[in-house]
Amino acid sequence: MPREKGRKVVASNKKARHDYAILDTYEAGMALTGTEVKSLRAGRASLVDAFAQERDGEIYLHAMHIPEYAQGTWTNHEPRRTRKLLLNRIEIDRLLGKLKESGLTLVPLQVYFSDGWAKVEIGLARGKKSYDKRQDLAKRDAAKEIARAVGRRGKGMAE
Image (cartoon, rainbow, N blue to C red; front, side, top):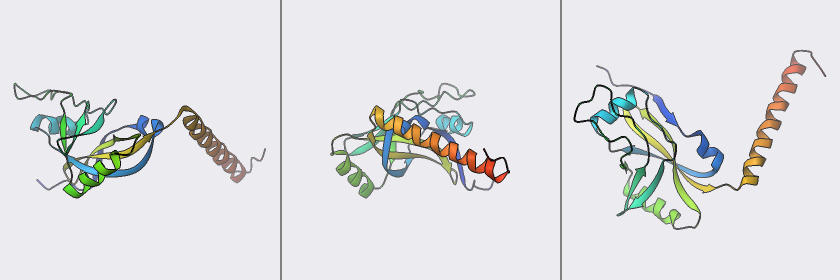
């Protein structure tokens, strides 16, 4: 069977970009069991409430939900187990140095398959205040309104 090509997104954390200002992103592999991979290939995963944290010089992903594989037997995995992220030592050291700054955290943004390998995109993030969130919503609404006006003008339906 030929190897998969390209990028197939399994799950994305839309709320993360709303709640956090993403400063930098990293791509990491995940240490998974067989039934977890099969469940991911079926498109079943959730990043709600998931976060990454350092422990013993390694980065781990906590609270990511991958439901049990339907055809799995006693070998099935635990849905919310802690999973190790696979990063280069240089990347881990760089991340740990940045995490020492106050107010920064690691948030998973997407889980996807890249050329057949399960990957997670994690973002170095700083929490947004509520007024920052309102400003972002106002900017997005203004951009939509401008696009609508341009579209109407292009169709000859000037206001």
